[in-house]
Amino acid sequence: MTRQQSRGKCNLCGETFGKAAMTRHLSQCSQVQTLAAPGKPKTTPAFHLVVEGRWAKAYWMHLSAPVKAPLSKLDDFLRHIWLECCGHLSAFEIEGIRYSSSAMVEEEERGMETPLTRVVDVGTTFSYEYDFGSTTELTLKVVGFWNQGGPKGAVQLLARNEPPQIICVQCETQPATQICTECEGTWLCESCVGAHECDEGMRLPVVNSPRVGVCAYTG
Image (cartoon, rainbow, N blue to C red; front, side, top):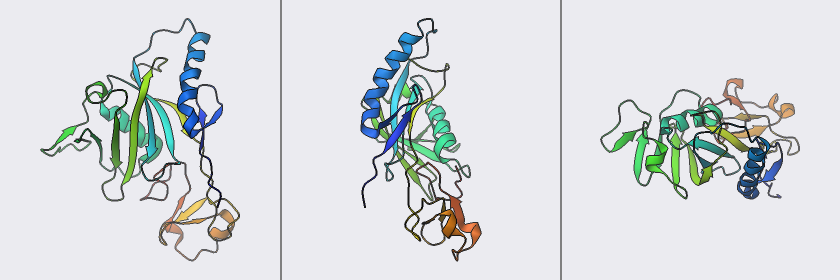
């Protein structure tokens, strides 16, 4: 099978680029956007983050996150755009220290009220987990500072992968639109799903997220 090149869309200019080229493009595109709006007010200093699925690297995003924003704000953003299904707990792990969303933080953990600037810097790579049962794991890296910024205090989506096209396992020709979770994540197209024997309640939609097909996540 030919390996599909992962591409994504820049939210600043709307153009698409390969995964490896997006970081370089965003650096150039942000300068162009800033020059095009000389009267734009100053914005909050932010980190430029690259986020991807640890075991599903076709899913990735570029974000800007205010340097003084607490980890909880980044947690909220990741949940909203990629993960939230049933209010599960989550945690970051940075330099061997775990920062948990739990209201009952364990002795060896810390809470997510910690500001980003106190725990990461350019070059820092760290991890994130959502749901400690059917866990979705992410890898995050700070690749630079983001000078253009967005609304004060907000995490901003800069770029995101285009949905990977996954072919139906039954007909092997049409793109899958649903996943049967009862038979180990069988990917099915609209034409084949009707003839599938498993209960309809065990199906989930194909969505553009590393949590696709997990728990009750529907995007």
